[in-house]
Amino acid sequence: MLIQLRNTDYLTKNGYFDLLGFKTGNFDRLMKKFDEVKYHELKTTDQYVFKQVQNVQLALVRFMDNALDLIRKETFDGATLDERLFVVFNDESHEDADVLDDMEGLYSSYNQARAEAQKNVEAEHGTSMFFASRMKYINYECAEIISSDEKYKKLDENNVAYFYQKFAIISEPINLEAEYDYEAENCDGRNDESNWQCVEEAAYGFLLRFVAHRKKSSEEYIDDLIKKGVEGDFLNKGIMKKFADEVYDFLFMKYEPNNFDEMYDKLIENAKEAENEYLEDEINDGMAFLPSKVDFDPWAS
Image 1 (tube, rainbow, N blue to C red):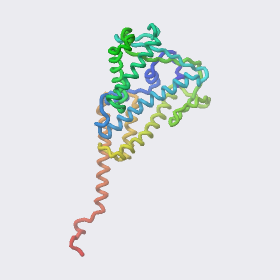
Image 2: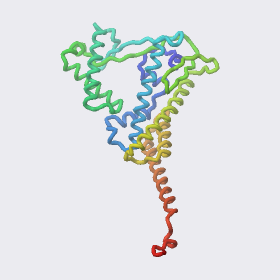
Image 3: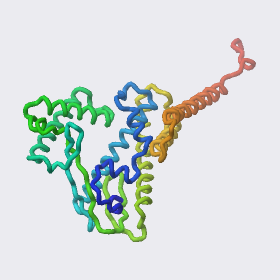
C-alpha cells in the first residue's frame, strides 16, 4: 500500500497513517480521554478500552516500522526508502537537520539524553503509563536534562529541542498485493496479478483485517480481566465481547460525531443494561427451582 501511493513527499509515520486513513477522529479523542489517567483507578469497562486503544497505537507503530524496514531492505523490486532527519528548535521552528554543524554529533547526544529521560520516567512512573502520556513525560524530562546537564551543553547552545524523521518512498509504478501475517508479523511481499487493488481498497482491506485481528486478541484480555475478578461494571464474557466489537467499530468510525462523549457513554450504558438483564434472567431461572409457598410445608414429615 505504501509503495502504491507513490507519494514523493517526505512524511512522518503519523503522516502515512493519516494518508492511509488508519487514524480517525474518535481514535484521537480516545487517546486524549485517557491522557494522564491511571489504569488501576479505572473500572473494568474503561480499563478494557484503555488497554485496547493503547494496544492499537503500539500495533500500528510496529506495523509501520516493519513496513518501512522491508522497503529499507529493498524487499520489493524498484522501491527504495529515502530518510531525512529534521530538527525542531526551542522556538518551535522546523529545519532539515543538515543545517546544523556537527549534525551527527548533536543527534547522537540527543539520543543519549532521550534514553536517560526514558529511564528516569520509568523509574518514577513505571511502565504501565498510557503511551501518549509516557511520550509527553519523556519529552519534558529530555528537555530538562538538555538544559541542565553540562554534557548536553552543545544541544542547549544550538537551541535543539528534539529530532524526528521523515520518509519518502521512491518507486516505479508497480502492482503489489502484500499479504500480512499478523501472528508472525511478517510480509511475504508477493505479487499476484489476480489481486491487483487500488490504494484505497488495499488500505481498507488492511484496516478490516487489522480490526478483526485486534478484536480476536481482545478476547484474551477479557478472559484475563474475568480471571482476576476485577471490580467493574460487568464481567459476563458474551456481553464484554459484544461491547468489544462495538468499541472497535466506534474507534475506527470514519466520521467525527459532535456528541463523542455521549456516544461513548452510551456504549457503556447499553452494556450495563445487557448485564442487568442477564443477571435478572439468572435470578429468575434460579427462583424457578425453589418451591412455592403453597407447596412448601416446613412441618411435613
